[in-house]
Image 1 (tube, rainbow, N blue to C red):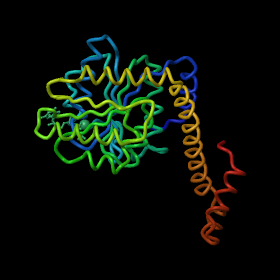
Image 2: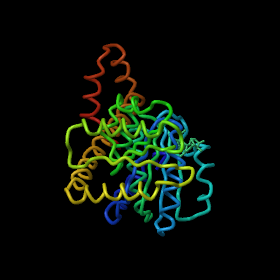
Image 3: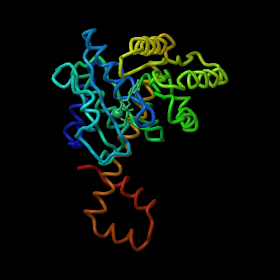
Image 4: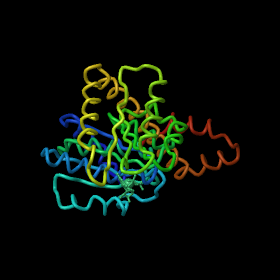
Length: 287
Ligand SMILES: Nc1nc2c(ncn2[C@@H]2O[C@H](COP(=O)(O)OP(=O)(O)OP(=O)(O)O)[C@@H](O)[C@H]2O)c(=O)[nH]1
Ligand SMILES: [Mg+2]
């Protein structure tokens, strides 16, 4: 799948018909807030409950594909030999269609392999991170007392995507202030049917992790009860189809320009990308 092998497409469609989608939880937040440590603690919790779990660490700014973000691998090493735990890092570059498409595909495959839960860890708070977050059913935004990152987060519009807030490093000074700030902000936000809870944690000591998971499951139940779960999965299917279509069109266009010198020459002479693109999409097929 990561190599974009075309045969995987058929495999994926075949898998989709009878595979159950796993629960998908995204963890996002500024670098160093403790996401990996927290995810590792959640993995331990899920394993005590006999659930299988896959962790996809996505770094929109990293060129690495198929490898592992070293730090994450070290932090989650105690799970490395557990066959019910799968950990993989994905970088954005080299993934046509972007990381959100890549993670959607990965989630479907993991579901087909019977994983109960998928956790996405995404570094940062930029646009591409928000796109990755949109792939998750529940998005956990991780803040800490230092860094002043609460303000940064709000700037990035993260309030809209947070279903659960974690204020990690509760063992550090200034923790209460961040929680209070956040609470004020949430109280000022427009009323919605789901109010994001704020969970204090000390990830390094596994404190607050059970409460965090209770909040995640409560959000999942909320999605199901309100019909939002269905709405979300339908929207995702439409979005994914549009992304796949864009990727196929891009591939087809590149190939046409490569394989048809007269077309390429005319493009260079006339400088008409729109007309050329339309013509390619109208007249070419993939075979
Ligand atoms: N004091 C304290 N330190 C913590 C806590 N949780 C994590 N840390 C430390 O914070 C550092 C960063 O933790 P990571 O889990 O790598 O953070 P991350 O958000 O995954 O980092 P990136 O993947 O680089 O964005 C490590 O040194 C952790 O040991 C906590 O609750 N309290
Ligand atoms: Mg990490």
